[in-house]
Structures are given as C-alpha cells and as structure tokens.
Length: 105
Image (cartoon, rainbow, N blue to C red):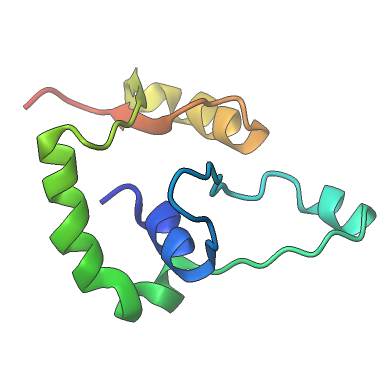
C-alpha cells in the first residue's frame, strides 16, 4: 500500500507537534548531501515494518476511505512507456506516485 515510507518515517523520526508542518521525502541526489556535509537519517521500509505494520493497516486504509488523506497519482498507460516513467521518477520530474496502467480489467 502506498504511504508506508511517509508513515513509518513520521512515526519514527518526526518531532513535530500538532499544527506544525513537516515534510517526509525521498532522497533525490545523494551527492548533494555528501558535497555539502549534510547529515541525513534514513531507513528502508522493511527495517521498520515489524514496528509499524499493524498500526499502519489499522489506521491508513480507514482514513483513505473517509477522505481524510489525499493523494495523487500520475497514471501512464502502456508498458511501452515504462522507460519514460522510470526516467521521470529518477530525474525527480514526477509530482505524484508514478503508476503504469498495463490493461483495463
């Protein structure tokens, strides 16, 4: 289910209080971090899965169903466009979850 990375990161690392805006994102260019001597703390979803999985699935699907959480997807039709979609994601040009629709059901 989409959103695990943001949810787990928020639960594990956020110190924000109610009303404070905080951002959880992926790292687009690691060389910028190394070049500027910036400290970054990160994780892979699998490392925190055991800790937050049950809470995530008990919370997030219900919030989505009630419309409390909003998300966007960039849907591209056809496997023939997969290269272009992956390139856009790698370049950071996508502004939403990249989805490739391969068939109508």
